[in-house]
Image 1 (cartoon, rainbow, N blue to C red):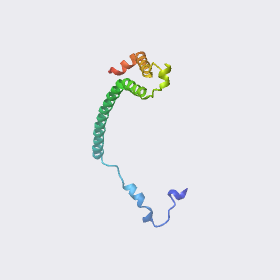
Image 2 (cartoon, rainbow, N blue to C red):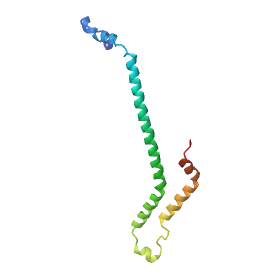
Image 3 (cartoon, rainbow, N blue to C red):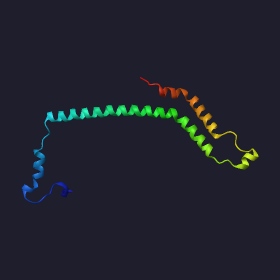
Image 4 (spheres, rainbow, N blue to C red):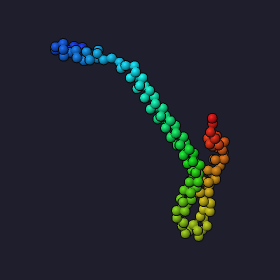
Length: 128
């Protein structure tokens, strides 16, 4: 493993340039570090404020979407029900379904909302 860092051959002026460069380096002055620290702090603070505002806007949009989601699901079920082809022999026999599936989905969604009413209300009210 000596080939990795130590046993170099050649003139001394070729061997020592990296060592001299590393030895001559020093830490940046404290005022420069302080300026970079203040700039970094201000940039991170402004981006955090923007992040918080964006997250609040996203939460409001999510709550609005969740508010209208049952209505959208009912409309989607109604459209799917209306696109279902009606067969003539179902109408003639009377064996066709008189109870649309959209009504069943609506009842299931309403029952789920009623059973989880306290959780839904606690999500909508802000907790300070």
